[in-house]
Length: 334
Image 1: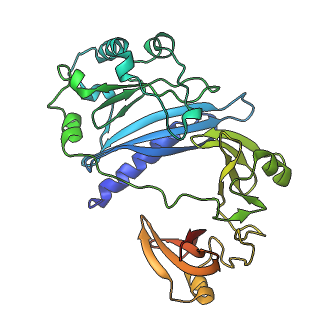
Image 2: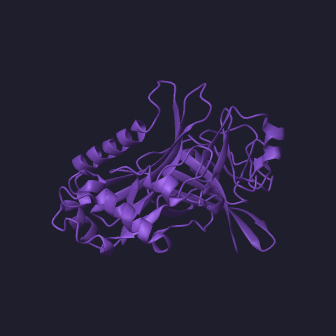
């Protein structure tokens, strides 16, 4: 941001918000993910989905909440900031959802449909349990309202209530409404890159291995936790994410592991997370293809050739540092 002081304040606000979701006991863990649900340059909405586990508890506590921040002031908004003072927007929204069940109701038919609980009922899971400042996400054309189910079921899709059906109770002079309407949504990308089956092998585990195979190779995990993408098998130095088909779809590590190698098995990378950039240059030369992606500088080298495919070795170095923070391999057509 141009205003670095305000950027610091907003980053600290986001940090404290995330940490506040953790169970209050000192030894509680917190793991999860987020997505940008609204962004137009003036208003930022972040949707946090996570779990917090306290040692000895029967299961983790589920977290599914949103935070909306004014990027010009740092103000955090609540749902009541959308509406006129002393308006019972809670009852109005519930009644609109009851009357427009078919039109408002959201269902997840996408990639993670198996992880979403769409068999919930209006009376049981929404009308009785959605409080005045319950879970909500601001969207471009309306407000998504939903409840957080028990641990044993997936997230609830909820309802999308159009702004047009609430205009008589919306405070059009409020700073929040002006921020929503100030400009159209802007796209934002918060991922370095998505892993594919060809990326890498760690400790003998590769993308696509079965959950049974993972346990056979690495033993029983220290812990397991649900996240947006599936179930995370946590070991000492890696996490293996297994999806609804019981196949590993992601392998995450913050450090080099002995035996870490490319899928082709023909070479060791020779560079590990945390190594200095000059070590990359010394081993692979200074003629890398360079690109910028978010906060990272990407360095790519031609690695190997297979029939109809080129293997490209990729290093990512966070801007402002000289340390390798990510290693991957991508496939390109010659």
